[in-house]
Image 1 (cartoon, rainbow, N blue to C red):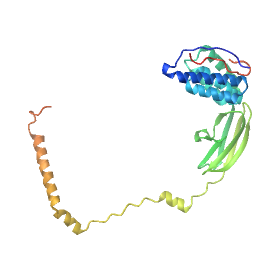
Image 2 (spheres, rainbow, N blue to C red):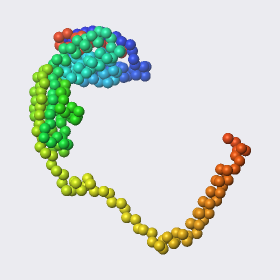
Image 3 (spheres, rainbow, N blue to C red):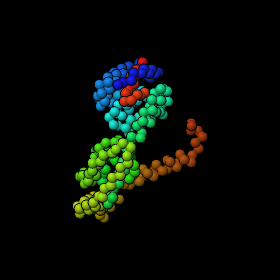
Image 4 (cartoon, rainbow, N blue to C red):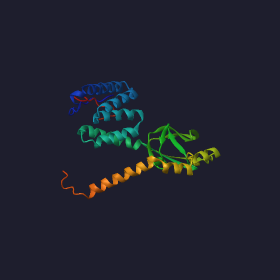
Length: 259
């Protein structure tokens, strides 16, 4: 059952943003209606879109409430922490956010993935989401429930395991990875072969004599000498003449978005 609460806040949208504000309000109302019907996946989608159009602590709270219903405790907890840090959040919104965060924090599970053997060039994916190197070997907050952990190397899966995380539990999953295959001779050659510089034909004596006997060469020297003479004159001459609330089921609050 949804808890009805009206919270009004300062209008942030400018007149030119009327369409954006109207869209955010409509999406928010759709989220409330879908939550009343128990369609939390669709409700979360509408709240997420509304939040993208117009950031608001109220919409963030409703999205976190829907995510809790779906088991998305980690994302919900981060949204609730963001509300607590938001200076624009009203006191009652901050209070219900803190209460909900206290309820869901003990339910968040921890997952630690360890790679033994040869982890070189191996990627860790949990539910098809990449775990970066910084997340390997440490406890990572995770949603309770079933998760598929897969180890991928060079685009091929080399190991996998299904894991069930209980609420508030710590699960350590270790993989003993096989040795990575040695590169083929062709791969080694492609990685180490230096680029070949284009061949350049050397100038022979006839070409040198042709250059120095050319009239254009001596004309060029004369031009350079003349330029140097003029430059010296300008440098050393006198330049003085030159000018210078939740209850029970964490139901979303009914809130008016914008004014």
